[in-house]
Image (cartoon, rainbow, N blue to C red; front, side):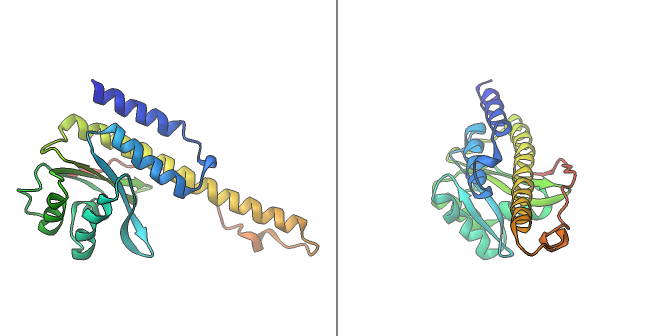
Length: 208
């Protein structure tokens, strides 16, 4: 029951998060922090594409990117697969894990005994992956997974809304500059190709 309340509080906090209060770079760490509070996790990270390469640039603990470094180097791991396949991956015991040996060794070395990786998707496209790590073996039960899938869905709404907001803000700033210019310019010169699109989400599949 306590975990359910925690997830509900975290989802409520996401819903009340005003994206105009900070940049997308401010929004991502907040999502990671709330994810840690929502689930039975000791640390959380978000994997996203950076210059075309998957990277855990957002985390609640500096050990998280160190753990993920092994899978980025080997190009194999639950976080990468969650991102690529839009599926949920559970590791109940890093000591017994055989699907991603390099990642499992790195996680165990840092005291992580179980993990849960969930995709963050919008419009059937991967935005990133939410990675939860626990120092307790088999920390994530069926109910925890269901709750965190809900959290990941709400996270996708927040991130897409943040992106749309900042795209619109930049367009508005450009339009204001155009209106103040002594040499009038057409709207097409300031990015009229931008259009807010309807955002639809799909529930990820499971792989555990």
